[in-house]
Image (cartoon, rainbow, N blue to C red):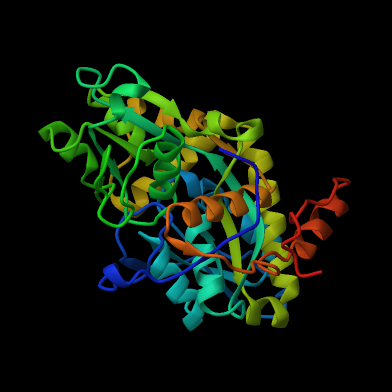
Length: 368
């Protein structure tokens, strides 16, 4: 995939107005769960500028910074007497709606819904304040039907949802092969079958699809069912890095409670450092959190390869967000936007510099 060119913005597609919102992070549906979980606060801990901060994220490995940070108490340690209330979401649209409604203050979310939320509100409702994860997306195929990349032509490939991050990536890759596909219908030289990640493994087993361009852990679930990883999306990006999860905040909360935002970002930075220093313990912590949220832990043949394919980092990889938007423009799913101001990295830079680290690049899309 190419480096960022002039950037693009998201538009509503009339043909799919029945969908609640165009773009989602991973396409796991649109329900949300207010689990009411609050972290325990140490006795005598001093509160920050508010009693509570409401945090949202997905019960998904690409959101492991949030899963592990909450599970291990790393966020709560930075927040002192300010408690955390968590909510989990199955797709980006519902999380953006919750942020806009004030049901959450800070969230972990994919690039497409972050762009959509920003542009739909004309830049008024959210900011991206940090990165969280890169990678974790693969093209997994039935090895009996597809033996090479050229064999993908003429086959049925699942993506999570029309216009979501992985759907756009697959459409862009197909176009780079010289194949023509109508983005909205999914028909063309390759058939794009929009399928919820929860049922993609069953669709694969039944033969309804020949492969899928999907995030983890769905990709590893397909491999466990006999699929073969034909392509890791990270190999298409400069430095093998591209944003899969951002941290967003409501602009109102950022303005009113900058100390709380900084505390959450400190927790995120320290959580990412702990994850990278203790990968096995962190994997177990994330799986424990998933088990508590879903009632079922991931088996080792799924979580082990999935975990290895995700990189946890503080850098929002802003230039790749611009490229992802641009690919959607090329597919006919986006109008050209002005994404200037979608990032406010000043709080994160303050946190990083306090630890002797350099600030991060907003790729010309910052508030300054």
